[in-house]
Image (cartoon, rainbow, N blue to C red; front, side, top):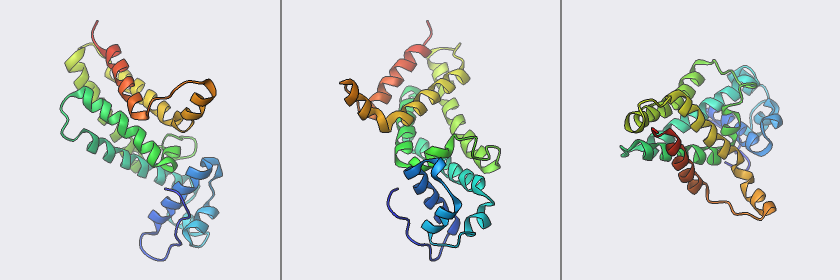
Length: 204
């Protein structure tokens, strides 16, 4: 996801523009994004992004949608063959963090409601699909561990915790160095998160 985007010559121009956008956001963050720079990196005219996406918000929404589509794929692959809901929750947590790390440009705008059209139908379908996947796992955890579990609250808490970890991930080693502490590998942290969450979700 790094390095100069090859100049566009043929094929799927919207995909090339999304790739250039994701690369730029990964390097500079959403505030460093511009349609002109995206066009330059994709090797097309400066009018091309607006022609395909309308404006910067439209392009960023398309990138965010692509990120959620990838997240849904990662969730599905992570839980394949798993029947235990706790194992599925843990696998999805790891898939979420891996997606954030592997697609930093997409991750940077997936939840940035202030700069995307979060009511755009394709975005809604992809983002809601990811939430419903998590909600389904929480329903299974409720059935297995605690019939009184509020699955909406549990899903929101879980998403918030893992999203926070993914957001903090790039700086964890620096914090550990400055505080003379140790940081466990991200997947080990997810194992710990899952244990803590399940302990809280279980019936008393």
